[in-house]
Amino acid sequence: MSIEFGLSRLRALKNGLNTGCAITTGGIGATAVVASGDCWIGGVQVVVSAIDVDVSAFSPASGTKYIFARLAAGQSSTATLDATSADPRPNGWAVLGLIDNNFGGGAPHLEALDISGVTGFEAFGRAQNCTVNITYDNALARGGTLVFANDQKLFNGNIEGTLEYASISGQALAEIYGGEWASGGAGSGTWTLTATHEPIPFAIEAQQISNGVTGTIRILKCYSNSLTLNLDRENYLIPSLNFVGIANSEGDVLTWNI
Image 1 (cartoon, one colour):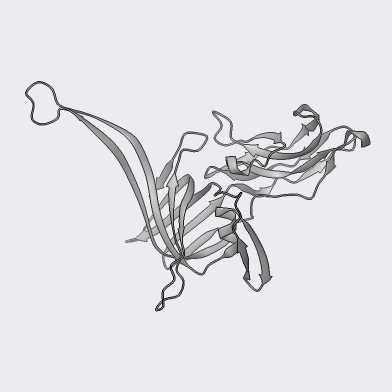
Image 2 (cartoon, rainbow, N blue to C red; image 1 turned 90 degrees about the horizontal axis):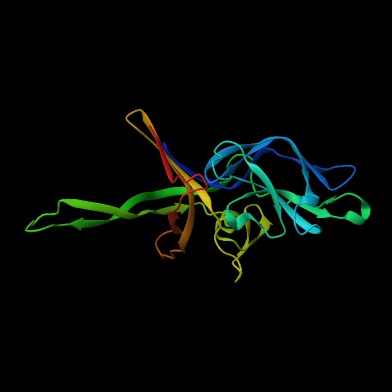
């Protein structure tokens, strides 16, 4: 999802497929054939290599499985494929598809693909204001007769930010906060936030050009913990949201390229 205005750009990127990674079922046995491609996980673009996945190796051995890509410990450019009976998207993994282990027929059945990603970036809104705050708690130590501290310890680091935007997309809200989006055509529709959905992780990339120098800040994995729909008699509806950054599976939190 992208948010663009003027020379500045802000885009929110959902974990999921970018290109390739198509899944087909093998002709014999419980095999899912995965084509090579790439996906986004924790703000990092990673490669999925072509491979045949033995679905029968995953426990339990029957029922519908999500085939998904994840970053394992020590991985930064290639993804590991896995399968689970529970929806893996709340964990920040990229869903490749659904497989139904129909061993009675001798081969798994490929369900309708439940792709979690998008090709490129989906329009989200027009950014009005965005701030990113990096803070630490600081403990100071004083010994003996010292009046001023002579030692310190930083802890509890936090990355938090706020964002205001216009040109609302109900589908984008559903992809970040959960719930269901029912399109009514021509950009209209209904977003229904249900009692069982919760926000899913995404990455935020902010780009600003100043004096001919382009700076790009990317928060690799974050959640929005607050959404405000500001209703004002004198303005159009301009929603605002707060977000909190956490480390991705590689332990990285933020990158700044200038």
